[in-house]
Image (cartoon, rainbow, N blue to C red; front, side, top):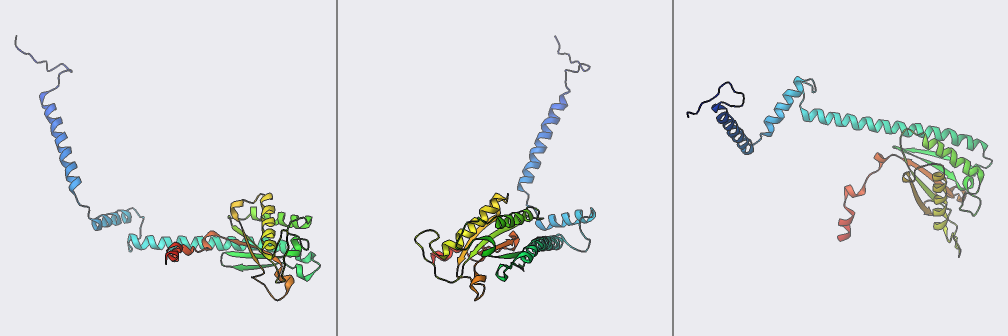
Length: 255
């Protein structure tokens, strides 16, 4: 019986379609091989993107990608620096107003607090007599706790998150004891820790806080009363320089 084809039957495909499919597969393989062996010309690609971005209005017609990228980075960095400086100024003003009220109520000149402003930072200088009883390192004074609570309230409303370093200082008078605090180092460190713990009790993030103690080795003046103090240093992250970027510390140890 002769083999008869049914051209009208949808199940039967024309013979050329199989060959066409094979041809398309071979062409696809061929172009993939060409692409894998191709070498991209970086200069032409950059020129192409320049033309496309200029045509779409992303770039100035008179400048290239590199120039505008650097210009944008400088503008962004300058804007961030200005914002940080403004935030520092705002925070310093708020704390200054509160400090002024406390100073007006102070009876002794030694209890006067001061604020020193720097680049992207400011420091609040608090005499020890404002926070601690004589010879004590724990915050037991209710007025001192209220004062710390006010500072914490201002910190929580600051426009950005500041790092806060609590620094303890003592006068130069020699101090030795068999119990804690044993010397000026202990006294300055324990007072800093007491202030930090009080800030934490007032809902300040511990990750923001840092404790430092200098004992009697960072005197403010020749006046012993002025040297007995606790400093609160507020600073932004981008104002700090990493010494490891300038010279690797561990490389120096190997020398």
